Image (cartoon, rainbow, N blue to C red; front, side, top):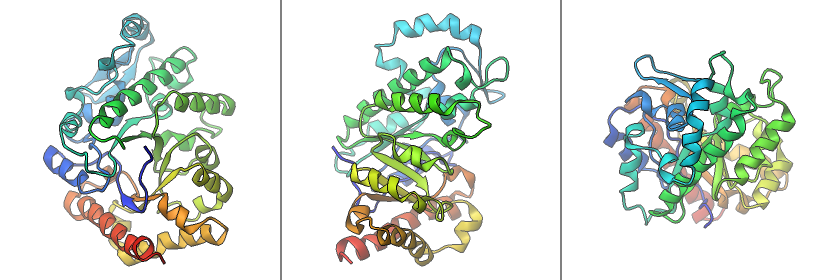
Length: 343
C-alpha cells in the first residue's frame, strides 16, 4: 500500500532519552510513529551497533564503546552465518540490541495511517566500521557484496514484522554517509557505488526509502527506485529546490518527500517559531510550484518532520520534545491552510 502524505508527521529514530517509556510516548505523538533508538541508554542502541548484530567479523567492546571488524574473525564466522541465511532470527533486532523495538511490535497500531522502522544503511555502515588495518570495510571487495545483501535481508525481516501490525509500514535506510559517497576522498568509485546502491534497493521490499541529514548528490538519490526520501530541508533550503527535474520525476513516480523543517539543535530551535518555519517551507514549495510542479501533487506527497537527528541536543524537554510538539503544530497549521481549505 502507498505511504500516506498530506503533510502528516513522522520523525527520525535516534533520540537522547534514557527513559524508554518516555521516548516511546514521544514517538507515538507523530501521525506515523516509529520505534526510537536510544544510544544514551546503552551502546547496543547505537545505530551502527544495532545493524552489526550477527554480522560476521564484528568486534564489539561494550566497555570502551567501540565497534571494529576483523577479517580473520569474518572468515571464521561466515560459514555459520551463511548456513542460517534463511532464518529470520539472524536478521532481526534482538531485545538485547533495542529496548524499544519489541515493545513497539506489541502495540496496537492498526489505526495509524502508517508506521515506520529503520536500519543503518550499508554505505554508512561500511564507511564507519574499520578493519584491523584501519580501513573502512566498504572498500573490501570480499566483504562489501556480503554486507549489502546482509543489510537488505535485515531491512526485509523488520519490514515484514512491522507489516503484521500495520499494513502501511515502511522502512527508512539511514544513510548519513551518502553525502560523502561521490566525493574524491571516498575511495569508492562512482560507477561501482551507483551499481551497488541500485542492487541494494532492488533487494529490499517496498515501501523503501532513505533518510539523511546532510547534503548529498540529490540527483543520485532522487533517481534511485525509492518510495520516500527524508531530508533536512532546514539547512538545504537553498540547495534542494535547484534539482527541479529530478524532484519532478520522483513525484511523478509516486515518491513521498519528508520535509525536515523543525530544528532540534538548540541555537536554531530557539530563534524559530511556527510562523517563521511555515514561511520557510512555503517559500521552498513556491519555488517548486512556480517552476511547474503541481502544488496539489506536491502537498499530497509530502510529510513533515524534525530537521535533524534529535541526539544533537541533550535538552530533552526544552528542545527535543518541544521540537516534536512544534512539528505536530506546524503540520496542523499547514494542513488547515493547504489541505482542508484547499488554498
